Image (cartoon, rainbow, N blue to C red):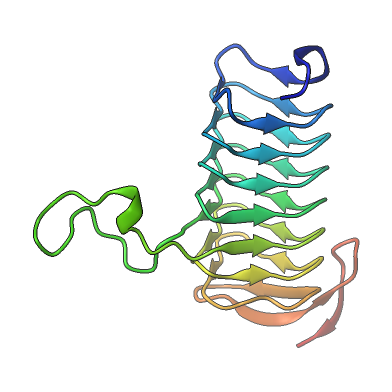
Length: 176
C-alpha cells in the first residue's frame, strides 16, 4: 500500500487493507475497493465506484461516478470508464445452484474481461464477460458490448456494432 500522504482517500471510502493503491491516485467519496484489488498510479476513482476483489487497474485511469468493476476485470493504462458503466463477469449468473443452495464464490464461472490501453467506455455501457476492448477503442454511451472490440474500433448500440475507427484522440477517422 502506498503511503497515505501520496494517495488521497476520502473518509467515506471503504478500501480493504489488502488493496494496492499507486501514488498520486485519488479515491473519492463512497467508493468501495475490495480485497486484493490493484490500482495504479495517478488514477481518479470518482464517487460511488465499486471495485471488486482482484480487479487490476493500470496507471492514469479515470473511472467515473457509480461504475461497477467486477472480479475478473483488467483495465490497462490510460483507459477511461464512464459513469454508470457495468462490467459483468458471469455469463450464466444465478443466486442458487440447481439443488437450491446459495452459490459460493467457487461456484461462479468467471470470464476475464480486458480494457486495453487508452480505450474509452462511454456512460451506462454494459460489457459482458470475457470481452476484450482493444487499444484506443471507443465504446458509445449505453452500448451493450457482446463481442470483442478491435484496436481503435468504435462500437455503438445494443448489441454494440462496429461503426468505424478512431485515432488516439477519439476522433473518427474512417467508417467500418
